[in-house]
Image 1 (cartoon, one colour):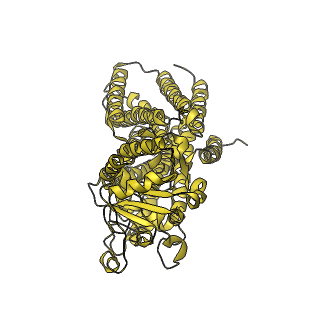
Image 2 (tube, one colour):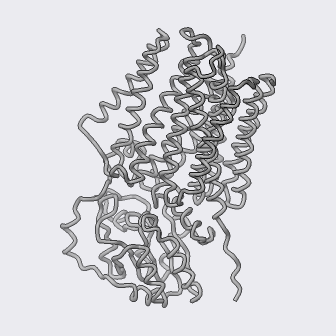
Image 3 (tube, one colour):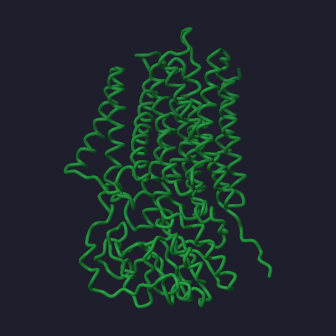
Length: 103
Length: 465
């Protein structure tokens, strides 16, 4: 009896949901906005699929319709990757601790 | 070109780095490092993909070109965007993830060989289902986020748009997606695929239009969650661990945030989704106003009170963001601190238009994060505080939520500002907040209303202290 590889992926998926559940509950509420922007950035790892789609060549034409969708997805995802990580960094830079005030 | 096994290991590593990126956000000190982990994970995932495909033809140049174009746009936005516009920025970014998921699914459908999913017209059943789900959720995320963006940006009114039979209509559309996916799987015909995507776009729009402005924190978190599930759906299609892990992380993250936001409003997730609540608050404005006396003051009175207070708690809300008053507020606090007044900030979970919105704005104005407290941390301190300074918040301070079971906001956790010796309430008028409920606090003995624009009033107070 062989186990369908889907089951393995599904197991990873379910376990990752649990990991996500515990990790996100430990995020401090004051960082919820950066949390949203960083999850945004990392979900753009979908660019992996876009790159495969863009580079796939069944003929000599590199701009077949399926490639074009890949290229478009690359642009969208990279806006998100750069925008998401950079804006998160910009926000996190602003969070400062109280300076010791000496009189 | 590297082997499939090796690349799978690298994808796993980038998945782990993403987990660490979220883990870093447990405290501001570790958060910057966490973000770097995230960036590293992304670089690994992209590099490994290039190496796995191993096609360094002319197409590769275009990939890099488009990546740079997108990257430049993203970087430009990230540096230019004002912090008050974060909610709409995040909504806009969600829509991009959604659309990217749709495009990848379309591409996989048109050219399944590239992804080892079979040939056009004979795609593996499981893959077909996975890519359909990815595309449908992605399309809903896209159009829903666009609507959320328009509402947050103020291009579209924040009032709920409802029509008769709306929920039934949505339900029918939802069922029709399932039916179309069924036909797609049994016939492999393109038409069902396109039809399903179109209907999903439509559902996204219809889902968000009935939801009012005050519920935006839930909507944004929910769309965050959807973008994750869409990514996971595509991850299954591409058999890519990094995508599956990320999708699951983002999906659960958004779901938890939605839950926290709903709890902050004491509303069930379901009732938020059904919508129709709140809006631009035109109800019952006139009828009560004249009956009860309201004490109002000017900047001088407020300055006098603040100067003589030994402790002050500031309660910021969405109005502060609209008026861009956070910097003026910080100046005021600096002056007070020189006066040896103890100042802290109280942030309600649903203050603003997205989770943590107020915290970011205060951080931008150089307010140290250890002076900013959450509802549970600070609520007991109001009783021992001289002055509560409410700036731009409304519903989250309404004592009615504790006393009147008839009120629509009854049971919502609120900040106990009325327990302070005196309350300064900066607001433009006596109009009720987004929930459309009159705030009982306005008529209390110890409340002084300061009718003005939040920024201007704060500046005037600084001048008078």
